[in-house]
Structures are given as structure tokens and as C-alpha cells.
Amino acid sequence: MRPFLLTLILGAALALPAAAAASPSQFTIFEAPRELMSDDAALRTQTLDEIQGFGVQWLRVVMYWNSVAPDHDSATVPRFDETDPAQYPGFGRYDRIISEARARGMRVLLTVTGPVPRWATHDRRDHVTRPSPTRFGRFMTAVGRRYGSEVRFYAIWNEPNHPDFLMPQYTGSRRHRVAASPGIYRKLAFAGVEGLERAGVPGSKVLLGETAPRGTSHVVSPLRFVRGALCLDSHDRKRRGCHELRVHGWAHHAYTPAAGPFYVPPQPGDVTIGVLGRLDRVLSRAGATHAIPRGIGIYLTEFGIQSRPDPYMGVSYTAQAEFRSISERIAYRDGHVRAFSQYLMRDDDPRAASGPERYGGFESGLRTSGGAAKLAYDGFRLPLVAILGHRRTSLWGLVRAAHGRARVSIDFRSRHGRQWHFLKHDTTNARGYWATTTRQVAGRRYRVRWVSPDGGRYYGPLTRSYRSP
Image (cartoon, rainbow, N blue to C red; front, side, top):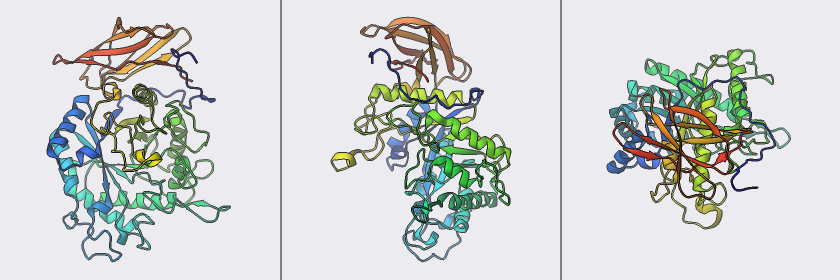
């Protein structure tokens, strides 16, 4: 393969809805738990400044029921009013970040999830197996009462199709395995929605899902999970006797492997960023049969591209910036997607181990674990994508921090060159997006420049061209 032409060989077409137009209101969510849940006030302030400096106004905060509840390791249910937020000792850290975000005019998506108190499970042996829907509903009432108008967007459970957060995923023997987690989750979802309604918070919106992207022998695939949780039959129609789930959207974590954003997983139940159309179609059919409200959106509430030093999932810093931007373009072009996200600000710290276990966390940050900015840092501020066509190259980008229309400058350089040359100017729409084309020249690299209203000069990273399937 010639180095100037980076082509991802897929063996299948990109499964996006052909008629979907770009979402007119897609927004960006940022999640940085390492910094924002820290007791270091200066670190929290610095990180919030950075996030807002990017132009992001939404934070995702994951609240673990286990970390809030009293006597969470006990098998004996403590005697307290489970709907009274004052009787939960662990709200403090969540209060702090929600208050700090709201003081800046930022909005919070609060994901309430397991692990759960041991006393809130069916057999009281661990923190994830068959949580009590009744007790979860009471907890959601307490959460709603705690935050009132401060939080209007909630998601129920983080990756409920993964055994780290909900068990059992399957029941039965090898030949007759049944996906159990969708049914368990459906009961939790109903209880959570009703619990928030009892809290009496007007205008609250609830997302379901937060599903992991790929299934295994231990993880229920996202489409199998969606169908089970929404009570759909083999034709994606609501089963007789099932009630509609009153929710605002479906949340999903559309991570992709090192092969890149155009990767097409061979298992039809998996949903990575390159095959969002699979999820679109199931949710559309579910809405048509009133399993969920018609026309609900998809919220990509956790996403990132793993980079080096992860030797297995990680890509180069250049590819990380490019893959992240291409993924955002895919989301933007899908009219069903309401939100895109970035997880993390800084990589997880390496573990005190050698071999595969050393990088068992996430290296999807815009900074290294030590704090140094990667190329994706500038690439997040100024995403740029170059897609090869028949004779022309399509350029797409976003000035994330723009308030209204903005002018950008586009530069190019040759495959072996070191000097940048001006190509053209372009103007964004009112939301900061822009798109143009240029004559296709083999080996060209591109970058985008932007001067903010206060005079700040920003440069995006070098961007290579890719061929879209």
C-alpha cells in the first residue's frame, strides 16, 4: 500500500441509513471522571476550564448506586427511608461536580448504575446479580429529589449488557443459553422511570441503554439486548402484553477496534461506530410498534479512540486524532444521532503489572496519563476529515468553540514536504460545521486554522486522506 493513500479494507459497505440527514441539534458530551471526581479543587477547575474552552457544555457523570448507599457491603437491609436523599451518605462528590457544572451554565447527563448495594440484590451475595427493581425505583426517587431542577437528563445503567455491571448475562446450558440481562434490565428501566416520576421533577428526560458495542460468550450483543429489553419479537415488533417504555432516547457506546471507524464487525448483533445503521433500524421498528416512543434519538454517550502505549487496541497519535474525527463525522451525518462524546481527558494510569495487564484501562484520552497533550487534543478542538472521492477530496470539519459562523483557513502540504501552503478559506454554519471539496492530489496532507474572536490562534493536527467505503 502506498503511504500517501490510507485505505481501510473492509470487505463490506458502511451501514448507514441512506436517507438520513445531518442532525440539526447534535451536541457534545465530555466525561473526565479522573479529574472531575477528584478532591483536588484546582484540578477540577482546570479541567472544567479546558472542557468549556473546547466549546463543550455537557458533562456525563456516572453515579454508582453502591458508592452512595449506606452499608453497601452488608447483606442485611439497613433501616432507612430509601426515597429520602438525606439518608444516603455518599452523595457528596456528586453534589460537588453537579454544583460546579451548573455554576458555569453547563448541563449534566447523570448515569445511575450498578454495582449496587449487596442488600439490594436478589441473593445478597455480590453487587451486580439481579438488582431489586423496587429498591432501584426508590433510589431513583431519592436521586431525583436530591437534584431537582439541577439535573434534567438521566440515563439508566451503564453497559447493562456487560457482566461488570449486571448479572447474569446468560442463563441455561450451552445448547440452550438464554440472554437474561435484557429482561432484568427492562424491569429496572420501568422502575427507574417511575421512581423519577415520583420525585416530581418536571421536564426530566430518561435515556435507556448505554450499551457496550460488541457481544461475546459473556457479553450480550447490543442488538440482542435492545430487542430483549424492548420486548421485541423476531420481526422487531412489540410482543403482545408488553407496555411501552416512556423514554427520550437510547444511549450507546459505539467503540471501534484499532481497525478504525469504518470497521464492520462480522457479528450482526454488534454496533460499532461504522454500523450505526443497525441500531437505527431496530429502534425505528420498535417505535413503529410502540415499544418505545416513535422517533427517539441515539445518544453516543461514551466514545473514544485508544492510542499507544496500548499495544493491542492502541493506534498512533496521528491515527487517534483522525479516527476520532472520522467517527464524529459519521455521527453527524446520521440524523438519528443526538449526541456524540469524548471519553477521557487523560489516559488511565498504567497498572503495576507487565504484559497485557499493564494497559488494561483506557488510553482514549486527549492527554497521556502524565498529562501531555496528544495530537487528538487539538484535533478535538478542530476536527478535520479528508475523504477521497473519484476526482476530488471532500473536507469536513468543526470549529467546536465557535459561537455562530466562523471563518477557517485550510492548508495543505505534500507527502514528503515540511512546509504548509494555504489552500482556501471556508465559513462554518451557525453551529460551527463546514464542508468543502478540493482537487484530489495524491499524498496531500491537510490542516485547519482558526482565529477566535479574542485573537487566539488555533491549529488542528496534520490530517491524512481516507477512502470511505
